[in-house]
Image (cartoon, rainbow, N blue to C red; front, side, top):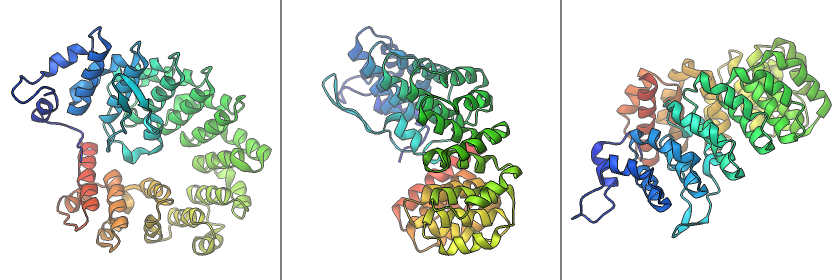
Length: 407
Protein backbone atom coordinates (compact mmCIF):
# COMPACT_ATOMS: atom_id res chain seq x y z
CA UNK A 1 0.00 0.00 0.00
CA UNK A 2 1.19 3.46 -0.89
CA UNK A 3 0.56 6.29 1.53
CA UNK A 4 0.47 9.90 0.33
CA UNK A 5 3.57 10.92 2.19
CA UNK A 6 6.98 9.21 2.15
CA UNK A 7 9.67 9.42 4.78
CA UNK A 8 13.15 10.74 4.12
CA UNK A 9 14.43 7.17 4.56
CA UNK A 10 12.17 5.95 1.77
CA UNK A 11 13.35 8.80 -0.43
CA UNK A 12 16.98 7.92 0.08
CA UNK A 13 16.25 4.28 -0.73
CA UNK A 14 14.32 5.10 -3.89
CA UNK A 15 16.93 7.54 -5.13
CA UNK A 16 19.66 4.92 -4.72
CA UNK A 17 19.96 3.97 -8.37
CA UNK A 18 23.51 2.65 -7.96
CA UNK A 19 24.68 -0.58 -6.25
CA UNK A 20 24.68 -0.68 -2.46
CA UNK A 21 28.36 0.16 -2.23
CA UNK A 22 27.93 3.32 -4.31
CA UNK A 23 26.86 6.71 -2.98
CA UNK A 24 23.05 7.07 -3.21
CA UNK A 25 21.74 9.91 -5.33
CA UNK A 26 20.79 13.02 -3.37
CA UNK A 27 17.35 14.50 -3.79
CA UNK A 28 18.68 17.91 -4.80
CA UNK A 29 20.98 16.37 -7.41
CA UNK A 30 18.10 14.45 -8.95
CA UNK A 31 16.02 17.65 -9.05
CA UNK A 32 18.86 19.42 -10.85
CA UNK A 33 18.85 16.66 -13.44
CA UNK A 34 15.32 17.62 -14.35
CA UNK A 35 16.99 20.58 -16.08
CA UNK A 36 19.71 18.49 -17.73
CA UNK A 37 19.95 19.02 -21.53
CA UNK A 38 20.22 15.23 -21.99
CA UNK A 39 16.66 13.90 -22.40
CA UNK A 40 17.63 10.47 -21.04
CA UNK A 41 18.93 12.06 -17.86
CA UNK A 42 15.74 14.10 -17.46
CA UNK A 43 13.62 11.01 -17.92
CA UNK A 44 15.71 9.06 -15.42
CA UNK A 45 15.26 11.86 -12.89
CA UNK A 46 11.48 11.75 -13.37
CA UNK A 47 11.49 8.00 -12.76
CA UNK A 48 13.56 8.29 -9.60
CA UNK A 49 11.35 11.02 -8.15
CA UNK A 50 8.22 9.09 -9.01
CA UNK A 51 9.56 6.00 -7.23
CA UNK A 52 10.57 8.07 -4.21
CA UNK A 53 7.06 9.53 -3.79
CA UNK A 54 8.56 12.53 -2.05
CA UNK A 55 5.95 15.35 -2.05
CA UNK A 56 8.60 18.03 -2.42
CA UNK A 57 9.16 16.75 -5.97
CA UNK A 58 5.71 17.88 -7.18
CA UNK A 59 6.72 21.48 -7.91
CA UNK A 60 10.16 20.76 -9.50
CA UNK A 61 8.54 18.16 -11.78
CA UNK A 62 5.85 20.54 -13.05
CA UNK A 63 7.93 22.32 -15.75
CA UNK A 64 8.61 19.00 -17.52
CA UNK A 65 4.90 18.74 -18.31
CA UNK A 66 5.77 21.22 -21.06
CA UNK A 67 9.09 19.62 -22.06
CA UNK A 68 9.92 19.64 -25.81
CA UNK A 69 9.85 15.81 -25.88
CA UNK A 70 6.46 14.11 -25.77
CA UNK A 71 7.64 11.05 -23.87
CA UNK A 72 9.07 13.22 -21.12
CA UNK A 73 5.82 15.17 -20.93
CA UNK A 74 3.81 11.97 -20.58
CA UNK A 75 6.16 10.62 -17.92
CA UNK A 76 6.00 13.90 -16.01
CA UNK A 77 2.20 13.90 -16.02
CA UNK A 78 2.13 10.25 -14.91
CA UNK A 79 4.61 11.03 -12.14
CA UNK A 80 2.53 13.96 -10.91
CA UNK A 81 -0.62 11.83 -10.92
CA UNK A 82 1.13 9.21 -8.82
CA UNK A 83 1.42 11.71 -5.96
CA UNK A 84 -2.36 12.05 -5.82
CA UNK A 85 -3.68 8.62 -6.75
CA UNK A 86 -4.46 6.08 -4.04
CA UNK A 87 -3.25 3.28 -6.32
CA UNK A 88 -0.33 3.51 -8.71
CA UNK A 89 -0.94 4.91 -12.17
CA UNK A 90 -0.26 2.10 -14.70
CA UNK A 91 3.18 2.15 -16.24
CA UNK A 92 3.91 2.17 -19.97
CA UNK A 93 6.23 -0.55 -21.25
CA UNK A 94 9.42 0.79 -22.69
CA UNK A 95 12.24 -0.54 -24.83
CA UNK A 96 15.26 1.63 -24.26
CA UNK A 97 14.14 5.22 -24.74
CA UNK A 98 11.15 4.34 -26.92
CA UNK A 99 7.64 3.78 -25.59
CA UNK A 100 6.48 0.38 -26.77
CA UNK A 101 2.88 0.33 -25.56
CA UNK A 102 1.04 3.26 -24.08
CA UNK A 103 -1.15 2.76 -21.05
CA UNK A 104 -4.82 2.42 -21.85
CA UNK A 105 -5.53 4.34 -18.65
CA UNK A 106 -3.34 7.38 -18.09
CA UNK A 107 -4.93 10.60 -16.91
CA UNK A 108 -8.30 9.94 -18.64
CA UNK A 109 -8.45 6.57 -16.88
CA UNK A 110 -7.50 8.15 -13.56
CA UNK A 111 -10.24 10.75 -14.01
CA UNK A 112 -12.83 8.07 -14.78
CA UNK A 113 -11.92 6.22 -11.57
CA UNK A 114 -13.61 9.02 -9.65
CA UNK A 115 -12.95 10.97 -6.44
CA UNK A 116 -12.43 7.91 -4.23
CA UNK A 117 -9.33 7.03 -6.25
CA UNK A 118 -7.64 10.33 -5.32
CA UNK A 119 -6.11 11.43 -2.03
CA UNK A 120 -7.81 14.58 -0.69
CA UNK A 121 -4.84 16.91 -0.86
CA UNK A 122 -4.41 20.22 -2.64
CA UNK A 123 -2.21 20.57 -5.70
CA UNK A 124 0.33 23.41 -5.81
CA UNK A 125 -0.65 26.24 -8.20
CA UNK A 126 2.54 25.58 -10.18
CA UNK A 127 1.27 22.12 -11.10
CA UNK A 128 -2.20 23.34 -12.09
CA UNK A 129 -0.68 26.11 -14.22
CA UNK A 130 1.70 23.72 -15.99
CA UNK A 131 -1.12 21.31 -16.82
CA UNK A 132 -3.37 24.07 -18.13
CA UNK A 133 -0.53 25.36 -20.30
CA UNK A 134 -0.10 21.86 -21.77
CA UNK A 135 -3.77 21.88 -22.81
CA UNK A 136 -2.56 23.92 -25.79
CA UNK A 137 0.21 21.46 -26.68
CA UNK A 138 0.54 20.61 -30.38
CA UNK A 139 0.11 16.88 -29.63
CA UNK A 140 -3.42 15.65 -29.04
CA UNK A 141 -2.38 12.95 -26.58
CA UNK A 142 -0.61 15.51 -24.40
CA UNK A 143 -3.63 17.81 -24.48
CA UNK A 144 -5.98 15.08 -23.27
CA UNK A 145 -3.59 13.84 -20.60
CA UNK A 146 -3.14 17.39 -19.31
CA UNK A 147 -6.81 18.41 -19.14
CA UNK A 148 -7.83 15.15 -17.48
CA UNK A 149 -4.96 15.42 -15.01
CA UNK A 150 -6.33 18.83 -14.01
CA UNK A 151 -9.55 17.08 -13.05
CA UNK A 152 -7.64 14.60 -10.91
CA UNK A 153 -5.15 16.75 -9.04
CA UNK A 154 -7.44 19.79 -8.75
CA UNK A 155 -10.17 17.94 -6.91
CA UNK A 156 -9.34 19.07 -3.37
CA UNK A 157 -8.65 22.73 -4.08
CA UNK A 158 -8.67 24.50 -7.44
CA UNK A 159 -7.20 28.03 -7.38
CA UNK A 160 -9.58 30.78 -8.47
CA UNK A 161 -6.75 32.35 -10.47
CA UNK A 162 -6.68 29.26 -12.72
CA UNK A 163 -10.42 29.24 -13.47
CA UNK A 164 -10.19 31.51 -16.57
CA UNK A 165 -7.71 29.11 -18.21
CA UNK A 166 -10.02 26.15 -17.61
CA UNK A 167 -13.02 28.10 -18.92
CA UNK A 168 -10.97 29.02 -21.99
CA UNK A 169 -10.43 25.30 -22.68
CA UNK A 170 -14.19 24.98 -23.17
CA UNK A 171 -13.67 26.87 -26.43
CA UNK A 172 -10.57 24.93 -27.55
CA UNK A 173 -10.23 24.09 -31.24
CA UNK A 174 -9.97 20.39 -30.35
CA UNK A 175 -13.45 19.00 -29.58
CA UNK A 176 -11.94 16.23 -27.46
CA UNK A 177 -10.40 18.89 -25.23
CA UNK A 178 -13.67 20.83 -25.08
CA UNK A 179 -15.55 17.73 -23.95
CA UNK A 180 -12.90 16.82 -21.38
CA UNK A 181 -12.81 20.41 -20.10
CA UNK A 182 -16.57 20.28 -19.56
CA UNK A 183 -16.19 17.04 -17.61
CA UNK A 184 -13.43 18.58 -15.50
CA UNK A 185 -15.36 21.81 -14.86
CA UNK A 186 -18.26 19.69 -13.64
CA UNK A 187 -16.14 17.45 -11.41
CA UNK A 188 -14.39 20.46 -9.87
CA UNK A 189 -17.67 22.40 -9.48
CA UNK A 190 -16.33 25.46 -11.32
CA UNK A 191 -19.26 27.89 -11.07
CA UNK A 192 -17.44 30.40 -13.24
CA UNK A 193 -17.84 28.01 -16.18
CA UNK A 194 -21.63 28.44 -16.20
CA UNK A 195 -21.92 30.84 -19.15
CA UNK A 196 -19.43 28.92 -21.28
CA UNK A 197 -21.15 25.61 -20.55
CA UNK A 198 -24.57 27.02 -21.44
CA UNK A 199 -23.09 28.19 -24.73
CA UNK A 200 -21.57 24.73 -25.27
CA UNK A 201 -25.03 23.14 -25.24
CA UNK A 202 -25.14 24.19 -28.90
CA UNK A 203 -21.60 23.07 -29.75
CA UNK A 204 -21.03 21.55 -33.21
CA UNK A 205 -19.77 18.34 -31.59
CA UNK A 206 -22.30 16.09 -29.87
CA UNK A 207 -19.87 14.77 -27.25
CA UNK A 208 -19.18 18.36 -26.20
CA UNK A 209 -22.91 19.09 -26.04
CA UNK A 210 -23.58 16.08 -23.83
CA UNK A 211 -20.62 16.78 -21.56
CA UNK A 212 -21.64 20.43 -21.22
CA UNK A 213 -25.17 19.47 -20.19
CA UNK A 214 -23.95 17.04 -17.56
CA UNK A 215 -21.45 19.58 -16.25
CA UNK A 216 -24.20 22.18 -15.85
CA UNK A 217 -25.91 19.69 -13.58
CA UNK A 218 -22.72 19.05 -11.65
CA UNK A 219 -22.23 22.76 -10.94
CA UNK A 220 -26.00 23.08 -10.25
CA UNK A 221 -26.43 26.02 -12.63
CA UNK A 222 -30.06 27.20 -12.16
CA UNK A 223 -29.92 29.47 -15.23
CA UNK A 224 -29.60 26.38 -17.41
CA UNK A 225 -32.93 24.78 -16.40
CA UNK A 226 -34.93 26.16 -19.33
CA UNK A 227 -32.24 25.35 -21.91
CA UNK A 228 -31.82 21.82 -20.54
CA UNK A 229 -35.56 21.23 -20.59
CA UNK A 230 -35.64 22.32 -24.21
CA UNK A 231 -32.78 19.97 -25.02
CA UNK A 232 -34.61 17.11 -23.34
CA UNK A 233 -37.64 17.76 -25.54
CA UNK A 234 -35.47 18.12 -28.63
CA UNK A 235 -33.59 14.84 -28.19
CA UNK A 236 -36.47 12.87 -26.76
CA UNK A 237 -34.36 9.76 -26.23
CA UNK A 238 -30.78 8.50 -26.27
CA UNK A 239 -27.69 10.01 -24.69
CA UNK A 240 -28.68 13.58 -25.48
CA UNK A 241 -31.97 13.22 -23.62
CA UNK A 242 -30.38 11.37 -20.72
CA UNK A 243 -27.64 14.01 -20.38
CA UNK A 244 -30.24 16.76 -20.18
CA UNK A 245 -32.39 14.91 -17.64
CA UNK A 246 -29.33 13.93 -15.61
CA UNK A 247 -28.37 17.61 -15.40
CA UNK A 248 -31.89 18.65 -14.40
CA UNK A 249 -31.86 15.96 -11.70
CA UNK A 250 -28.61 17.35 -10.31
CA UNK A 251 -29.88 20.94 -10.31
CA UNK A 252 -33.15 19.74 -8.76
CA UNK A 253 -35.15 22.90 -9.39
CA UNK A 254 -38.76 22.53 -8.19
CA UNK A 255 -39.98 23.61 -11.63
CA UNK A 256 -38.58 20.34 -13.03
CA UNK A 257 -40.82 18.07 -10.93
CA UNK A 258 -43.40 17.55 -13.73
CA UNK A 259 -40.53 16.52 -16.02
CA UNK A 260 -39.29 13.99 -13.48
CA UNK A 261 -42.78 12.59 -12.96
CA UNK A 262 -43.22 12.14 -16.72
CA UNK A 263 -39.99 10.18 -17.10
CA UNK A 264 -40.29 8.10 -13.95
CA UNK A 265 -42.05 5.43 -16.03
CA UNK A 266 -39.91 5.82 -19.17
CA UNK A 267 -38.91 2.71 -21.09
CA UNK A 268 -35.29 3.83 -20.83
CA UNK A 269 -33.74 2.80 -17.49
CA UNK A 270 -31.29 5.71 -17.60
CA UNK A 271 -34.23 8.12 -17.83
CA UNK A 272 -36.04 6.40 -14.95
CA UNK A 273 -32.89 6.57 -12.88
CA UNK A 274 -32.42 10.33 -13.42
CA UNK A 275 -36.09 11.03 -12.85
CA UNK A 276 -35.99 9.22 -9.51
CA UNK A 277 -32.85 11.10 -8.46
CA UNK A 278 -34.46 14.40 -9.39
CA UNK A 279 -37.58 13.69 -7.34
CA UNK A 280 -35.46 12.74 -4.35
CA UNK A 281 -33.34 15.86 -4.52
CA UNK A 282 -36.28 18.21 -4.99
CA UNK A 283 -38.01 16.68 -1.98
CA UNK A 284 -41.19 15.94 -3.92
CA UNK A 285 -43.22 13.18 -2.24
CA UNK A 286 -46.00 12.87 -4.83
CA UNK A 287 -44.51 9.70 -6.32
CA UNK A 288 -43.47 7.88 -3.15
CA UNK A 289 -45.68 4.89 -3.92
CA UNK A 290 -44.15 4.57 -7.40
CA UNK A 291 -40.67 4.84 -5.93
CA UNK A 292 -41.42 2.19 -3.32
CA UNK A 293 -42.65 -0.20 -5.99
CA UNK A 294 -39.71 0.51 -8.29
CA UNK A 295 -37.12 0.15 -5.53
CA UNK A 296 -38.22 -3.44 -5.11
CA UNK A 297 -39.43 -4.51 -8.52
CA UNK A 298 -37.83 -2.53 -11.33
CA UNK A 299 -36.03 -4.79 -13.79
CA UNK A 300 -32.95 -2.53 -13.79
CA UNK A 301 -30.55 -2.59 -10.85
CA UNK A 302 -29.41 0.96 -11.56
CA UNK A 303 -33.04 2.14 -11.33
CA UNK A 304 -33.74 0.21 -8.12
CA UNK A 305 -30.69 1.82 -6.56
CA UNK A 306 -31.75 5.30 -7.73
CA UNK A 307 -35.24 4.84 -6.32
CA UNK A 308 -33.81 3.67 -3.00
CA UNK A 309 -31.63 6.78 -2.95
CA UNK A 310 -34.64 8.99 -3.71
CA UNK A 311 -36.63 7.43 -0.89
CA UNK A 312 -33.75 8.00 1.54
CA UNK A 313 -33.64 11.64 0.46
CA UNK A 314 -37.40 11.83 1.08
CA UNK A 315 -37.03 10.71 4.70
CA UNK A 316 -37.53 6.99 4.29
CA UNK A 317 -35.01 4.53 5.76
CA UNK A 318 -33.24 3.04 2.76
CA UNK A 319 -29.55 3.20 3.68
CA UNK A 320 -29.56 -0.54 4.40
CA UNK A 321 -31.06 -1.25 0.98
CA UNK A 322 -28.48 0.98 -0.68
CA UNK A 323 -25.59 -0.77 1.06
CA UNK A 324 -26.90 -4.12 -0.14
CA UNK A 325 -26.27 -2.98 -3.73
CA UNK A 326 -22.53 -2.71 -3.01
CA UNK A 327 -22.03 -6.40 -3.75
CA UNK A 328 -22.56 -5.67 -7.45
CA UNK A 329 -19.46 -4.30 -9.19
CA UNK A 330 -21.43 -2.40 -11.83
CA UNK A 331 -23.62 -0.66 -9.24
CA UNK A 332 -21.00 0.02 -6.56
CA UNK A 333 -19.69 3.35 -7.97
CA UNK A 334 -23.25 4.65 -8.41
CA UNK A 335 -24.27 3.66 -4.89
CA UNK A 336 -21.06 4.88 -3.27
CA UNK A 337 -21.70 8.26 -4.92
CA UNK A 338 -25.21 8.27 -3.40
CA UNK A 339 -23.87 7.44 0.05
CA UNK A 340 -21.25 10.16 -0.20
CA UNK A 341 -23.93 12.64 -1.30
CA UNK A 342 -26.05 11.69 1.71
CA UNK A 343 -22.99 12.60 3.75
CA UNK A 344 -22.11 12.53 7.46
CA UNK A 345 -25.79 12.20 8.42
CA UNK A 346 -25.65 8.48 7.59
CA UNK A 347 -22.27 7.76 9.21
CA UNK A 348 -23.79 6.06 12.25
CA UNK A 349 -25.98 3.86 10.03
CA UNK A 350 -22.95 2.70 8.04
CA UNK A 351 -20.69 1.75 10.95
CA UNK A 352 -22.64 -1.42 11.90
CA UNK A 353 -22.21 -2.70 8.33
CA UNK A 354 -18.50 -3.18 9.09
CA UNK A 355 -19.65 -6.44 10.68
CA UNK A 356 -21.23 -7.56 7.41
CA UNK A 357 -20.30 -11.18 6.49
CA UNK A 358 -19.61 -10.12 2.88
CA UNK A 359 -16.05 -8.72 2.67
CA UNK A 360 -16.91 -6.78 -0.52
CA UNK A 361 -19.58 -4.81 1.33
CA UNK A 362 -17.23 -4.21 4.25
CA UNK A 363 -14.48 -2.86 2.01
CA UNK A 364 -16.79 -0.57 0.06
CA UNK A 365 -18.47 0.76 3.19
CA UNK A 366 -15.01 1.51 4.56
CA UNK A 367 -14.22 3.51 1.41
CA UNK A 368 -17.35 5.59 1.89
CA UNK A 369 -16.55 6.20 5.55
CA UNK A 370 -13.15 7.47 4.48
CA UNK A 371 -14.90 10.10 2.38
CA UNK A 372 -17.65 11.20 4.79
CA UNK A 373 -16.66 9.88 8.21
CA UNK A 374 -15.46 11.87 11.19
CA UNK A 375 -14.10 10.97 14.58
CA UNK A 376 -16.52 8.05 15.16
CA UNK A 377 -15.35 6.38 11.95
CA UNK A 378 -11.73 7.17 12.69
CA UNK A 379 -11.95 5.53 16.10
CA UNK A 380 -13.59 2.39 14.72
CA UNK A 381 -11.36 2.06 11.67
CA UNK A 382 -8.12 2.54 13.59
CA UNK A 383 -9.06 -0.42 15.78
CA UNK A 384 -10.59 -2.53 13.02
CA UNK A 385 -9.52 -6.18 13.00
CA UNK A 386 -10.63 -7.91 9.83
CA UNK A 387 -9.67 -11.29 8.43
CA UNK A 388 -9.76 -9.98 4.86
CA UNK A 389 -6.62 -8.26 3.59
CA UNK A 390 -8.51 -5.99 1.20
CA UNK A 391 -10.72 -4.71 4.01
CA UNK A 392 -7.68 -4.03 6.18
CA UNK A 393 -6.00 -2.08 3.39
CA UNK A 394 -9.20 -0.15 2.71
CA UNK A 395 -9.41 0.74 6.40
CA UNK A 396 -5.82 1.98 6.45
CA UNK A 397 -6.53 4.19 3.46
CA UNK A 398 -9.78 5.44 4.95
CA UNK A 399 -7.99 6.41 8.16
CA UNK A 400 -5.40 8.30 6.16
CA UNK A 401 -8.14 10.00 4.12
CA UNK A 402 -10.07 11.10 7.21
CA UNK A 403 -6.93 12.49 8.83
CA UNK A 404 -6.07 14.40 5.65
CA UNK A 405 -9.58 15.87 5.46
CA UNK A 406 -9.46 16.84 9.12
CA UNK A 407 -6.04 18.38 8.61
